[in-house]
Image (tube, one colour):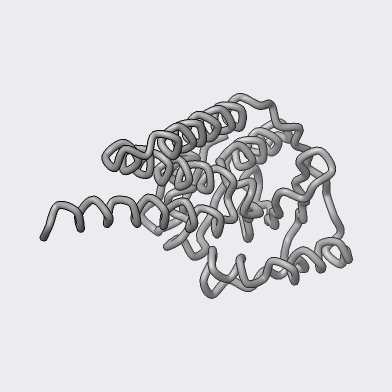
Length: 202
């Protein structure tokens, strides 16, 4: 393959990553993919001698780094609000995000009436997640632990776990679909027992 063609492919890859980043629902993923595209485009710009374009791309990389640092170090004002199973707010959010919930938890059908706790997680006044859970002694069995796309940086899960620890629960347990949830469970230090139940000690 001619060298010029290879160089053009590098340029196309960088541009494609920048475009793809704007399709990301997660702000963190958007920044990471956009930054990767910017780095590749920066290298491409240097190779072809387009220095104004190289300057723009390195500036984008630095901007993305700044906002990723800000996201990581910003204190999030989370709150946990208990809702009634028949709450219209809960019903609305479950309906509004049912496709994303189905994608995250294939085959799961959240049933608020089966839960002892129906919790809305807020970031300031913005809905950030939903938790449906059943009590069993000092264990809390998670029927649904769902974070809205823009809040999937694990800080919401840590807040949820700490909130239930403060309420006196000893363990969080999850036995639902995990094929798209395993990374989160492992990051949150859940351990899978011999029966396939994920358990986190609080």
